[in-house]
Image (cartoon, rainbow over all chains, first blue to last red; front, side, top):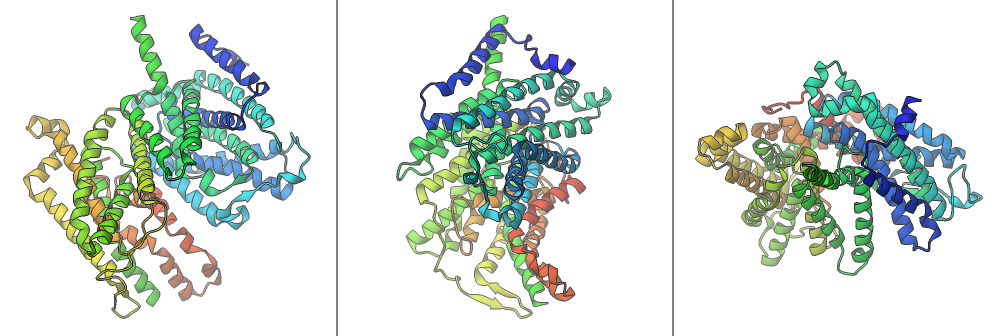
Length: 335
Length: 304
């Protein structure tokens, strides 16, 4: 009950933020009723998917300050669980998604226990290593299709199928992921005010002091890692139903892991709106650059050069992200 | 038995080149505590430099090594002065992602300039020749030359750092940057020098590899991960550690051959069916993970 109240209570934000957030929410709700291109629709779905990944990363990476660059492995576990169960046993999405979360969280506990004995760079690179090991494993595992991946055949389902989450139009997918998105925001709002959230922030500020206050640092990190994992895995399951064709290279590569961390950092790690702002900037940027430059002959690679240059400029010039800039401006105004 | 000796010799030879690949990463990490994701991309550019100069001038790729080293030195210094200098003021996550951005730019620049097709050297002084030492040990001349030259270059850098004035200044910066600054060492220039040396060694390693390793713009990531594993195993910042760890990682990449040997010796049928060659590099990642857990300082590490 207390948690629910926390989740719905946004009163500690300035009124301007809340007005903006509410208008964005209204825009997202009514968007499909206006005429739009299918490119805009798929970009918006990608935006919602990646802001959810970013929110998950933000728990451990933003509030906890642990640079996790291996989130794609949980995306893969979620996506593969859903698509394998759908193909073999016709399992409804709403059953396979929790099972995927269960697998992911179990795996996160197994590797989280040793991982969190490491710190800083050592931790970051070790998360990459675990993710790449799992990807290599999936590439030779015949049950999940090896490196060719796995394809969900939508033809045999009567669309719209809300049980298996198989639809023809993007509008249905849009509303499903939008509901996920709102639940995600409410959850994060409760999380940041929860006991674990406060523990994490004190760990980020100074781990030794946190320990001397009686916080079980290791266990708090593992628990938060599991929360982040559950987020990513659930959305990974949705991703499988949405794209219907998953390969290890698309779902579990290092680029995806980095992209997830990048969204949160660009928007502002450790704030509620940060990952959403980051995804709102990066996802359209990336797909627009690809659409505009990637298709032109003789221009292959240019879109990613621009994209990489933007990453370089941001991380050198404003490492605290867009939200950090906003807060700095506000502090200056107050003084 | 022949499989075993063949695998071990191949592993040791490639391990010497891997040690040179990781040398630059460990110097940069030792001096300024930053992990460079673009390290493998430097190697990729070194490979292209050697390949294209060799094709343009008609020299053997091994003769292009000094030029590749020069290009790498410039690249490292430019990256430091133009980018990394500003990056190190920020938090760690920004440093990691910033060098990742550098990696994306370099990789796609290569894709844009050179195209995505595999390129290999077909002719040269040593290409196609090999020595048969008996016991199943067949050493291709290109790999032998690469290994020997790697050890020579590695020793040269080790001497540069341990025996010269500038090397000692570099070491002082690594141990205590503030103290070094008080002693009148221009630490900023030392950082740039570390990046230059790091870039030069890794591009020269690329020039050595190009004789027997095909080049694509995507070849870098694998070497970045191998270099990370070597540096972790040897200890972040340790130069002798990088050498021995390079040999060990070289042997790890030859595990499929050793596995075949064990399967043959023990006669277990199930062992033959395991697709070990698909996991060639998985063992490197796994080794990194295990080393970090058992001994986070690495074999010779002095920084933690």
